[in-house]
Length: 160
Image (tube, rainbow, N blue to C red; front, side, top):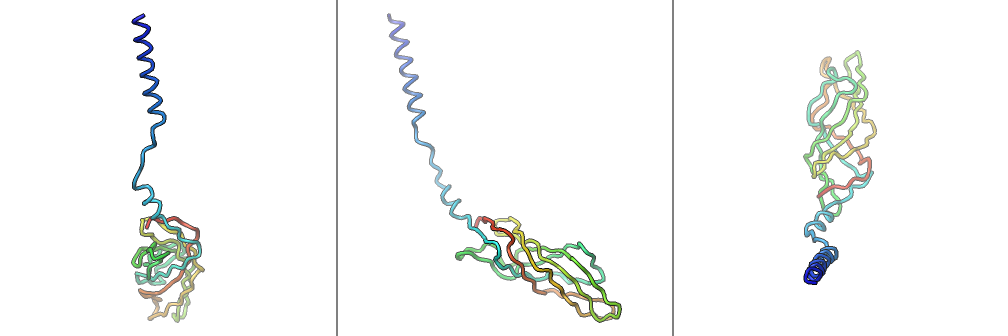
């Protein structure tokens, strides 16, 4: 009888502990709501203005060459900066037309991406930009500071 009573008391203790554990409140993560609130959507079609940050000689370019740009001004949503002025951006040479008489060269480039404040690369769409560069002698030079404009390709969530 003693063994049966002891067994019943032990079994009840185990079952009550298990029940209390099963119905315990889930843990609370205090920072979860803050992190979710910081994600802001940068909408497709948002304008991004960049400028050329290196001098380019048309004689040295080929189709497919990468070109480095810098974001000209902050891109903001509801007062939050999502792409900061000075952020890096990149694009590609799509076409190079060199004129034999040395008057000018046409360089067609596109802007493809820019870096957001959280480090993500934001895909951009730009109309191919045709830039006519003035020539000095036989060299066509694109100067630092040439402005180009692109638009965000897809909606993207950025941690601001």
